[in-house]
Structure formats: structure tokens, C-alpha cells
Image (cartoon, rainbow, N blue to C red):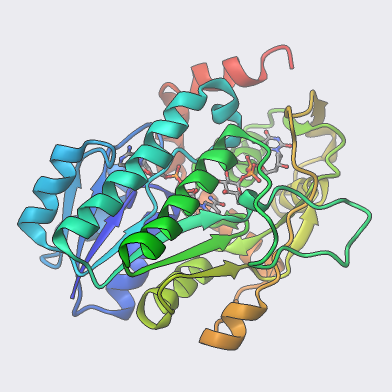
Length: 339
Ligand code: NAD
Ligand code: DAU
């Protein structure tokens, strides 16, 4: 079978490509990626020479380019990871998020209708559910939790989710949709909490914790997310939404302290900075449905996953040092100076 993976030069998409090559070597993979600041061909180096893999540089919001690719390749399955993914950047430039996350998704859906696919899978996020209060640890997001977004990023992802489900209901397009909690692991771009803290701590730089560091995220090792998507793609039911998460809730402060501990760095590096506007308090996924219906469960707990992640960043310095040497410096200045 032929799989089109969009956004495969980014964090989760690249991990998914590696997972698929290992688990299903008989399948051909085409990766479509615009190589924005978050896309990195160095990440895909291990598969670039693989005859079962093809990389195509292109924008999912470019209708002509997308149709031309479908005309040429006729993929059986499409998994859409391509997105603007960082909440802080969405506060800076919401339009870009609407363009890629909403218009890009719509164009992919149109292409799937026009050329026919066995399944379109949309990679979404738990952020579409909004947030939960910090003092109600008994509450979790289920697939029935109403959409209630906080940031331009989550609003754009929610709009895309609704379009995907509308194309199923209106046009009968075979779709599935997954909403996952925070991922971490190898190839995570160092604008996000965990890799940002690792790279800064290694340079003995201050670690900018938003607000009081009390916000809670539900962390999932990236390979567990990839395994869940693979199961949904192959065994899921058309038109269904699946939540993905592994009950690994931590406050941001606890995550940062764990990283410092792993690296043998002092807690005095922690600096409390002005909070993110609209900052979601707590995310927590109830993964009962995907466990019950598809037998998925995570295999890597946070304590083991964070050790592996820290080790990966220590052993792969050139990958992230290249990123830090580029326009990232301007980004960091813009986001954090005077905060
Ligand atoms: P990322 O920012 O690391 O990668 C995004 C990739 O998409 C990059 O390679 C980028 O070049 C590409 N891209 C961006 N705009 C494009 C466009 N217009 N056309 C083609 N390619 C484009 O993101 P990520 O963290 O890997 O997230 C992947 C997906 O998973 C996103 O849809 C995100 O919303 C979702 N998600 C992420 C997390 C998380 O914790 N990172 C959790 C749940 C869901
Ligand atoms: O829940 C899934 C979502 O997780 C995905 O949909 C998003 O694409 C992904 O970026 C992530 O969103 P978050 O906003 O939760 O991730 P981020 O790494 O940006 O921040 C995690 C927490 O850490 C959040 O509460 C904000 C805080 N934070 C973040 C940064 C970058 C800090 O305190 N300091 C920082 O410098």
C-alpha cells in the first residue's frame, strides 16, 4: 500500500515515518512537507536513500501542487501531520495557522475526494477540548468533551477537525481523527518546553518557566503516539475520533526539575517569566476508547521516556545545535526578551 505522510520532516511525522518503515517495510511512503522553520531534512536522512521512500517539498495549502502529487502517486492512505504547531507562535501570527491548519486540511480533503483514498487520518490535539481546572484531578477529556478552544492554534486545529468530520458526513469520505496529549522524544524542535529546557540547561542558561510553573500537561512518548496512529489507520472505524494519552500528568515545574536532575544542573537556573496569554491550565486524556476498541496502550512511562530523551539530546548535539544557530536566535529574542 501507498501512504502519503504530510509534515513528515517535523517532530512526530518523522518519528511516524521511522515507525512505519520498521513495522510495515512492504509499504511505500511519500512525505509531503513545506520545510518551514519546523521541518528539517536532516531528520529524514536515515530514509532519504530508501527506495520505498520519496520526499516531496510542497505546501498542503497549494491546491495545484497537492492535486499534481495525488495524480502522480494515487496514495491509498493519507496521514496529515502538517501544521503550524506552536501555541506561542499562533499568538504572534494567527493567519499562518488558519492558512496551513484549516485551508491546508481542506485542500487535502478535496484531493482525497477527487482521487479517492481508503482512509484520510487527521492528527489532532487534546488542545481542542480547552483546559481542565487544576483542583479537579478526577476530570479527563473524553471524545464527548465539547470543543472549547483557547489559542489561535487550538482554534485552527478544532476548525480542521470539524471540516474532517463534515467531509465524512456530507461526502462519505473515509476519515479517522485522533486527539493526542503532549508528545516528547527525539527530534522535538527546541521551541517546545522539554527540548528548550534541555538545550538551555546544557548551556547553563536560564530556564524560562511561564507563570508559577503550575500548569499540567499529560506527556506521551512519541513512539507510543505513532503506534496509536498506525492502529487507527489500519483498524479504526470511519468517522470516529480517538483520544490518545497515557496518564502521565506532570506540572511544568516538575518536568523542568526532572530535566535538571537528569543533567546534574542546579535548580537555580529556573527563572519565572510572564505567563502565556490564555494559558491552558491542565490537559488530561481519558484513553479508554482506543484501549477498549483497538487494544492500544502506551509502553514507555515518563520516567523512562525522559531519560531516553535527555540521552538523545546529549548524543545528537549537531541536530539541535544547527537549529539554535539559525533564525531561532531571533525567535528566542522576540518571545523571551523582557518577559
Ligand atoms: P512540527 O511543528 O514539529 O512539524 C510540523 C511539520 O509540518 C514540519 O515539518 C513543517 O515543515 C510541516 N509543515 C508546516 N506547514 C506546512 C504546510 N503548509 N505544508 C506542508 N508541510 C507543512 O509539529 P509536530 O509537533 O510534529 O506536530 C505534528 C502534528 O501533530 C500537528 O498537526 C500537531 O497539531 C499535532 N500534535 C502535536 C502534538 C505535540 O505534542 N507536538 C500533540 C498532539 C498533536
Ligand atoms: O497537548 C498537545 C499540544 O502540546 C500540541 O497540540 C502542540 O502542538 C504542542 O506544541 C503542545 O502544546 P503546549 O503549549 O502544551 O506545549 P509547549 O511545549 O509549548 O508548552 C508546554 C507547557 O510548558 C505549557 O504549559 C507552556 C509551558 N512553557 C513552554 C515554553 C516553551 C514554559 O513554561 N516555558 C517555555 O519556555
